[in-house]
Length: 131
Image (tube, rainbow, N blue to C red; front, side, top):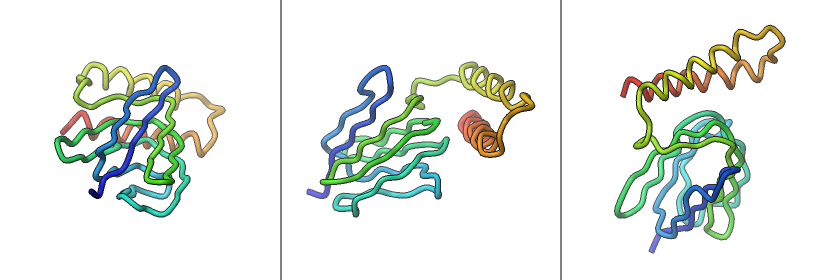
């Protein structure tokens, strides 16, 4: 079996636990990366993007704002402040998140790094909306 464990945790709850994961593609700060069984140990930060979880029975996609990823001993742990299943989202919810994010971008005292992350978030959410 070429499967590994996956756990996604948000401040509210344990969001997802799977023991039959074949591959996870994550939006790392350096770019998207794929994780397979026996990947080298890894700690990385997430940027806004899509987490693609593949297993024998299903593929699930989640939007994530940010987070920290750790892979060791064939367990991928993702800690994030905000995540949602793309199957549970609708256009009006996406429009509201985009509008709220655009309002934050209008602030004058925003740092370049934060501006980059917020623009990335808007870009990813718009791509979801038009798929």
